[in-house]
Image (cartoon, rainbow, N blue to C red):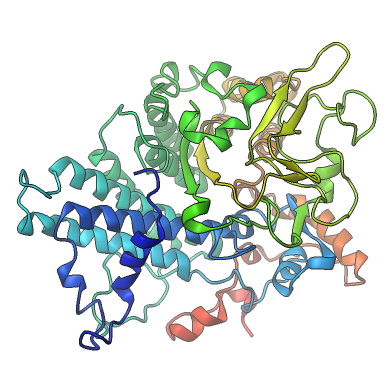
Length: 540
């Protein structure tokens, strides 16, 4: 089931909410939905549709619609607009001037995925009424448990994204099955939503077979633990986060290796560079996540089924990119060992050349700061006379691969979780072990390690966050890191002041209103639900 996101399957699931006038002009939800969920094949299609909806939400239904970037990174110091190719939406993000008309302020795609999960959760148990367990075409009890677990985990994951982006939101755990149902619903407190996420994930974890070798495209044991640890970190509940980190460590990677067998029992124990993808092949975990021992959960974007990924900033596109790596990051990373910045050999950080084209620092067409992290390449180790080098397997005018390339985007992987674990350990006062886990990532990257005695809680957290920025750029986490640790103003004020000065605007930086951490609700969302109230900073 690797190609689980085919357009045929998606069309089948989309028909749940369509109309077929050739039959009887009744809504499909009242017409053919009752004829669905009657066999294992129906369940397979529904699960495929749920994952397909999530991947289209995050990567997009068209060029530059990679919401994982717009929501998880674009407001941070990772990216900046390319003025010659900017849109009103990207300019708003660039200057922190979000409005309800922003193209990415709509939460509807996430709710579409939630709706599919709700349909599955309600209807899976009914299949056995049509095809009894043990007969041809039946859904086994084990498969029902697995599909239920994945649907619960997906619902929790989507609500977690919603809470982090918009705060309070309508919480719905039942599907819409009739046009006569009341669709409008007021926003629920984000604390209530997170409690539901935790409840869903606890049930999902209980239903999931432990210590099984997972498929990286599905929400298995490791992914469930990762989402739960991430939620507890967001809630600043570090002891519970640690519990779920250790449960993650007990799970298996897609290769069959236990992530961290020693670290699953004693807080701070375990952890080794051997747990991670090797530094010289760091990029391969993105081009072949199923073959990497640190993969946890990735999106499978298949070019044949879905067309070009065409993500702004982070993949090959057919037109000029609207964003590029932020100047502040571009000028401070990599760690330069010899020659000047822009040299084809000068860097000690093995991730740098596997992430972007560091030789082109000027604002030129498409080649400008090309980001090639998610494309295959070949590797050359550093020698006494030559630095480390990386060459794309498909190389065209400094561009990564072609638009006709499969792209796999990690949602969770072990490096990110190790660094998040280090953050949790630092928060509970275990600075030595926090540094140990931080140094695992630094060692694999080939950069100098650090000593716990040189840091207090605040400075160590900043060091961990900087390492997460280098390690995870393009993976949709930087903005949430800044919000979670309350460092938005600290990091973004100098950057925004410079941007504002460059265009002659008042130099106010981010401002003092932390409610601006949230996005506004899209005007389309407000118009479709009269019970919704706009987030405070964006009210007219």
